[in-house]
Image (cartoon, rainbow, N blue to C red):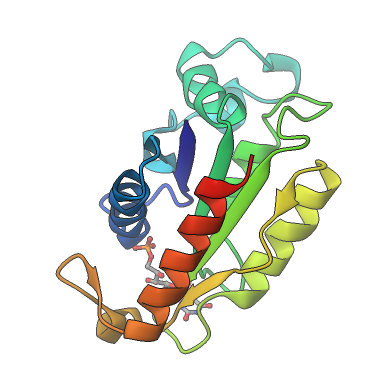
Length: 175
Ligand SMILES: Cc1cc2nc3c(=O)[nH]c(=O)nc-3n(C[C@H](O)[C@H](O)[C@H](O)COP(=O)(O)O)c2cc1C
């Protein structure tokens, strides 16, 4: 099962919409996928699920297990202040160590209102995933200018659509 992480805890986010679109595309390519939305994390997890409270918060563990138990992963990363959202790093800091992501294949999609499509956030997360011994696909897809490029649940730019399709094909094919 491929798990797609919508990497913000903002409710009804566009990351969630893009993650859902990605899920449908994976299914069309013949593989199983599910979306994990960080908006479903318990709001108190920073106090009640990390460090000395590791493993004690069932609702947090349930979300974490979906990510740690995935065969492959996709992170949809909205650009917040030139990087990925802080809530994703806090979530990752609640994972097991040594990492259960070790040896797993990960695809990244950056989205932003501005013109960049979050390349820096994808690089920042790549460093962290490398530390965890996960492998990030070289093809990282950027969706900038969201108001123009994401309309009614569909990517408008044909080149971005093609890149996303290629990324999905690679991800599905790889062991
Ligand atoms: C806290 C915060 C910081 C943001 N910083 C940036 C930024 O640095 N560059 C940018 O292009 N857009 C920025 N945005 C806009 C988001 O990239 C855009 O709204 C996002 O891709 C939509 O995703 P979301 O609905 O999943 O949050 C920011 C939005 C928020 C909430």
